[in-house]
Amino acid sequence: MSTQYALVLNSGSSSIKFQVLDPKADSTEPPFVSGIVEKIGEKNGHIKIQTETTKMEDTRPILSHSVGLERAFGMMSLLGVGPQELDLRAVGHRVVHGGEEFHAPELIEGDVLDRLKALIPLAPLHNPANIDGIENAQALLPNVPHVAVFDTAFFSTLPEAAANYALNAEVAREHNIRRYGFHGTSHEYVSRQVPGLLDKDPSEVKQITLHLGNGASATAIDGGKAVDTSMGLTPLAGLVMGTRTGDIDPGIIFHLTRSTDMDIDEIDNLLNRKSGLKGMAGVNDFRELQKLVDDGDKDAKLAHDVYIHTLRRFIGSYLLNLGGVDAITFTAGVGENAVGVRRDALAGLENFGIEIDDARNANEEGIEGARKISTDNSKVKVFVVPTNEELAIARYADELANQA
Image (cartoon, rainbow, N blue to C red; front, side, top):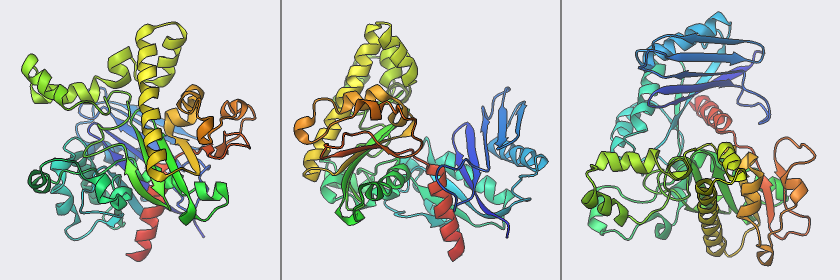
């Protein structure tokens, strides 16, 4: 019997990332095919396709998402791994914002696309690109089930006290303003592995998951359900990120409006793309930031300290909110690889039952996959668990395709 695959698409404003995976594969297995279409709309557009044995690239203008996706499929076919050549069970689409409308992955049929378009005001930078990707893929693969998987869905369980802002209630209701949270697919995927690492029933586990990449978020989870999270109406809120401020006094926006000639779009761009680590130190890659810190760069040191201070503030608030935790887990690019971030984030917390083992944190044994980095005596267990959002999306897509 041939392997049945799922295609996972993540369509952005100027790029399309994709993978072809076996939904039943182990999380450590590499994707069967991976690729990216980037610099869409630019004269130096680029497509890269990679299998376990072959790589193919193409650099020329890509006029639109539909052109880029069609060309990528053609390149895959030349390698014998095109969607038409494979036993493709489903296409899973990452959709950033599901609002209050979507609380779980959804088969894209009927009025689903219209309902997604109605949510564009909540995510004007992300959802239009996500929808564009869905429509292009449906046109190229009309006979395969398509499934939307939402970054916000995992946070539909937030208690009302955590989900609501102290904003005028009428204004909040009229404009759907509340805490939605993001990176939910990653937080859910990682948190589901922790009970097994603890040898506990999931319903008994209280945990904090830290998704630390260029975008970063923290989530408090009780019995498998999210009860608090750092991102809010948009992915701008919460932790310091690569190019985003994280939490700031909202009065700063009014101050900039009154004191400068920046309009609201320029301020939006400042907070989302020109702040965070990049805005403070000139770099948003944590590896580059660490090199600057090691070289004595004062701006980089301050950016690092602000990053850690904010991270510890959220960890502390979630420890209190949950009444203690069984586990704290780091994931994503920074969380999985930055030894110093994990060390500094949890330093000096022995009185709270948290002890990091330096050798385990540095992974001196070269362990692949999920691993414990706390001491054996640590009451709170600390883990590094690699995230795999694409595999999670593939599994959701395959599950709903079976129901179609």
